[in-house]
Image (tube, rainbow, N blue to C red; front, side, top):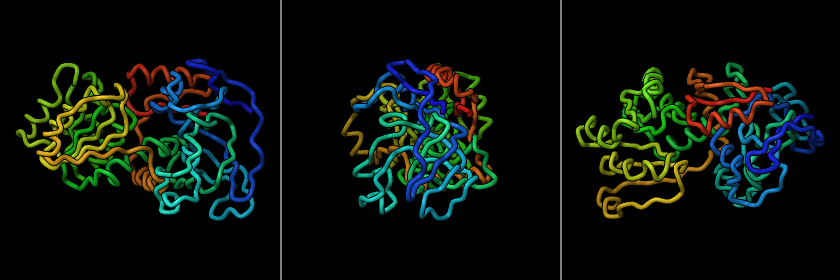
Length: 340
């Protein structure tokens, strides 16, 4: 079968590999139909794996497909069912897994497509507990955005930031895959949304998604604009994933007792911050990584209700590297997908 494999830094090749073994007890074989691209793919492409890995490595951390074959003892799924795939090989046995906190697994085998072979291949065999059935109303292209993009946003906003209807939120990089999802999810519950973008064209698109206030961070200081627009009160929640370039400005945008939730650091890994500001303003800062399996189900339900992903571009498998280059260039608005 065909698979897209990483042989070295920025060296992706479409190759022929052996098909996975038939599913064993509790496993399913999935025919992969679409893969979503994320910055974790860019980091892996650059060689930033943060852990040992064996090359060549099949890439792709987020995907959806159809059940091709069931192993013994698998209930609730049938051949032909559409499924979204969980992007980490969790153990399923530790306390975190059994309590439904999958992204805190104590014995995780690695992130798919980053540390271990991922989803950019025609078939994958995996534990049935790590696939989530897709509602009939949701396309496989949209479902391919659930495992990381929508699931991450669902976990950030509602598990961690505890976003409530009618609150105010600043969403950084409103044109990104998770930024567009955050705007849509926050607006769906009646929040006032402020967002940052890198150019006016993206600003117009973000406004069309429902953002109430859009700030071009290249021409305006976003923290000054947000404080002005909120009459210096600040927002209830900041949705962070940029890192050092925006971190301290993000804190200035929070009202007293406000919550900052972060899942990324695309502009670097280290920053400094004012600790007196932190405790005097009683900020609550939460790190968020990945999502729970339940968040994927919740995300798919939201898609079925009409909160669809914003899709920038769909590439064929052979052009996966072009998708990564587009994502890396930050010219993207929404998600980039690879279709089989």
